[in-house]
Image (cartoon, rainbow, N blue to C red; front, side, top):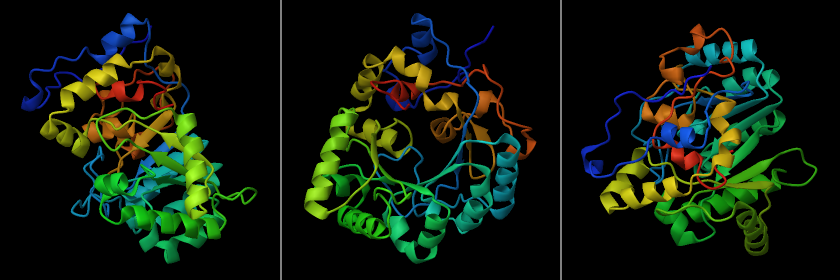
Length: 329
């Protein structure tokens, strides 16, 4: 028999006192569902919260002033863990992972350990590090997953910072010139779109088709896939929702759009997330919330292998984001 884990005694900020949200575990139980682990096939490595941007939708509060960055000892401990576990995919994220001085060392050591290595980029950080990074990324066939929230200049710049739209287009064109996003190159370039306000993303299939058409017609930019995800009400985005008076309506929107069919494919079921300091979480959002994997503070060096299947996944109100509509699958 499995038990559904949740965050004990988690009190919301004072600004949210009037909002009562049905606990996510109760909604799961209503649909006769349990959120437990399947065999883990993805290791997500958060290299730190240092970033060159302060995006309004960031669930980690990442930015230039953040000092948290994975050191070389922790990098080696993460590599050793990957050797013990034999993951199919290794997903490198941040902050801006390009700003971690140990990124190339990590890629070199971890590439032989998994058939698929992914690097999440905000593009502007990659631009600043292009001369140092691009050849190693190409040689190790690292998949680039790039944030590109909108086809509208004003919307993108309002979310990510002035001038970011034009800079992102320039980097995408440069990546295309180096083979990324081109058919038959073996260099995969995927985009991630996030809403620029307190609303859910539109249909992903239609959005991807539109992105392909407009990016190619206007700028000659090619890419492989687009993933459209809702913004998670944590970190800077949660603060903005509260300050702008949108928190309650946004949470109600997430709850009302709960899709029980999405639960089977949620990413947390097959994911292990390791933070910059080496501690393990069920996902990057629980990392942002400060809630450890299975509710226990376990360092990657202490973990003998992947989490056991049927282990309960810790849940909280932000989990509604991942299960709304098509969800984070």
